[in-house]
Length: 53
Image 1 (cartoon, helix red, strand yellow):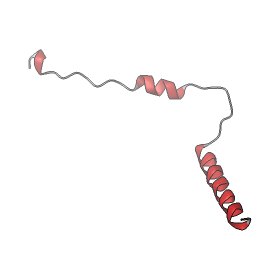
Image 2 (cartoon, one colour; image 1 turned 180 degrees about the horizontal axis):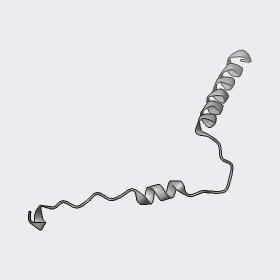
Image 3 (cartoon, one colour; image 1 turned 180 degrees about the vertical axis):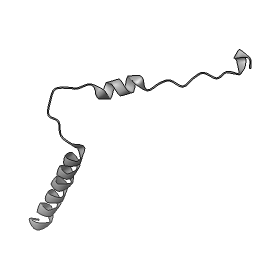
Image 4 (cartoon, helix red, strand yellow; image 1 turned 135 degrees about the vertical axis):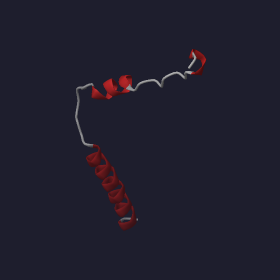
C-alpha cells in the first residue's frame, strides 16, 4: 500500500470526554428531576388557567 491510499484517522473524542468528566461547583440535580419539575409546572399552569378563567 502506498501513502496516497491511506485516509486520515478520525479525530478522537478525548477532548469531549475530559470536558464532561470535569467537576464543577454548584447545585447538582439529576436530569429526570428537572424534566418532571418542568412538566409538573406546565400541568399546574394549564390547570389553573382552565379552572380560574
